[in-house]
Length: 314
Ligand SMILES: [Mn+2]
Image 1 (tube, rainbow, N blue to C red):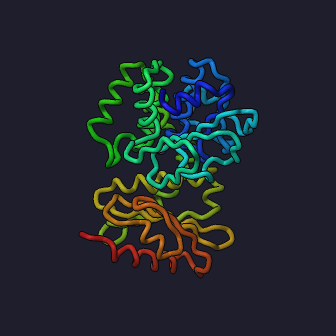
Image 2: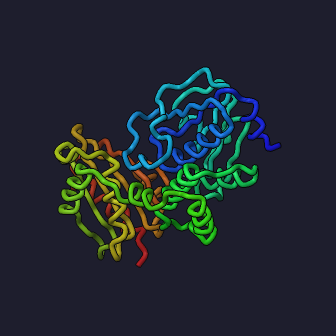
Image 3: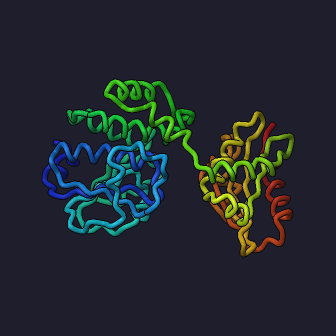
């Protein structure tokens, strides 16, 4: 029998862990596992250290059962989509199984089901269920679909291929509520986010033959709209779909005059390299930094735009 199935069989109370600031893949994979464990008549808890879970995830089955208090009575823990121990948001004393697809996963426990080539953690779980003859019901199919939808950026990501769509077809056949998920996950927004978007687009500037989209937002504008940082990042990412834009830059001036920078790229420029030059870090497509000793927003803008210009290839 599969080692993971064996651990599950012998456990009494299992806790599923979604990572801090959870995304659709971490929640979707935990949700599918939740259904599976209920089928096995196990006592199941679902833990996530972050209190506020975005409304767009309301389409994920069992989401109402997520708790911010960790159940120390559990005798088996399964972390989903967590690349490192820090992402768990809690100390785990019982046996832990790590199911993930991040290439940076640190194999932080005894039992690791890590496949870095998988598009999402839900894709790994889908194969796991198939290989172990688990019946995938409608709730599970919906949850698995959400992970694929989220981690592929709505099927726009570079790692999407025919296999992705074949899996999607199978999940739909199994009853995945894909239309509702598409609307909720990809399109739902808040009034605050729309208000911030209006402010940001009004002030957007295109630089260097429209290859760089530049935005700046101050704390006052954030407060005025009621939006959160993630809303501003959404607008930044949207600007990458303008015809010539290769890099999008957002500078957020804080009330203490420090400047937080967000970089996004269409793939032609490595944002992590740029962020590194500014004391930050991240991935090739998305990175960030904080400037503590800049005198003005204008000065910061000039400096960073000049750095980006050197990386742009026409
Ligand atoms: Mn993921």
